[in-house]
Amino acid sequence: MSEEFKIEIISPDQSVYSGKTEEAVLPCFEGQVTVLKDHIPLITFLRPGIIEIEGSEKFYVEDGTVEFSDNNLLILSATVQSLKKIKTQEIGSMLREAEQMLSKNQVSDKQRYILNYKIETLKQIN
Amino acid sequence: MPSLDDLKKRIKSVKSTQKITKAMKMVAAAKLKKAQESAEKGRPYSEKLQNIILNLTKSISDESNAPKLLAGNGKDKVYLCVVITADRGLCGGFNSNICKLAKKHFKNILKEGKELKIITVGSKGHDQIKTEYSKYIIDKKSFKDKKQISFKEANEIGTKVIELYEQEQFDKCFIFYNNFKNVITQIPQAEQIIPTFIKKDEKTKDHIFSYDFEPDEDEILDDLLPKNVSVQIFKAFLENAASEQGSRMTAMDNATRNAGDLVDKLTINYNRSRQASITKELIEIISGAESL
Image (cartoon, rainbow over all chains, first blue to last red; front, side, top):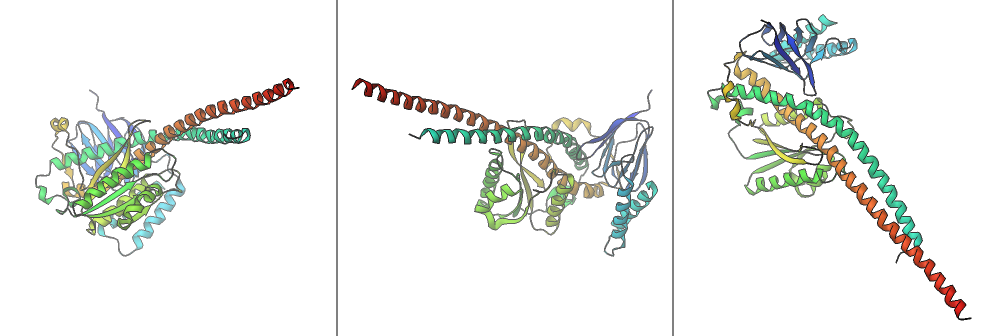
């Protein structure tokens, strides 16, 4: 029996990715989650990080919502970008922006948490 | 009876107008295709998001404890209306249809003794609404200089609306836009976005999964609901953009046809008066010759 499940990544403008895979790693808000076939139904949201689809592309995301049910993995995100298409200059400017935000005093704990992950991820791909 | 010269001038001017409307129709047709595509691409996102929220709300047992964006703040006094129109005219009844619907709602709201606040998006709507309701308008937005409206602009408005809601500036929020059905039909629509209003679909009832929530329902809802507001606004933008081009295309098509009819009529008129003058001259010559 095939161990594949359907995966779909949608941004408000278009459907970014749609296909089948055996394994996907998601940067969920409370830690990384690996989804395999027949995972229990799950709803959660993402922090900045990288979505890894086994045997296919990698995507950078800043936020998003994930639903897994009936062997359909659905990722909704307004900030998703394929790692292949993302430009080095862009990463640099995003990194600077994030660091600037972090250096301000009035960031909440939650924002700080998100920004730290953003910086870490951006450095990783850079 | 206008002189021959006048008729000639009129025919020329109508013809050049026809050229313009024809060109505008072509441009609108090209833009329509693009706008229609992005409207169709944008639909799954908002639909799926609504679905997730629906699934989430089903698992909330204690409704009184639900987030304010979902359940409302319990009051029903101040209404915020976001009227989304185009920045350009010459698109038939597009802008007036939205404004007409919006004004009907405004009247009802005021009649019930409730407070009204308006945000207009797009300069054409602002022009039409300010004549009667200028004192209620709290903000106006226009994206005239933007070539294509992206999610960023929608998010900007969404964030502002939520900010106002958190400051308890209003209790309920509606958006007005044109829903794109096809090229000829666009339906002006009023939609409630705060508190989030989700159509309960009976068919989906069988598919209740017992979801695993991480971190928990409330936190996910806190994250999702503000997003949903922006997404709904973005959807309205996309539908509106497609409707605007569709409406402009039909309007310009009609205008071109009317101009064609007018040119035909004027040409017949022109020829008739040309022949009349020739006949008149001939009669004069003949009767002059006879009298000799």
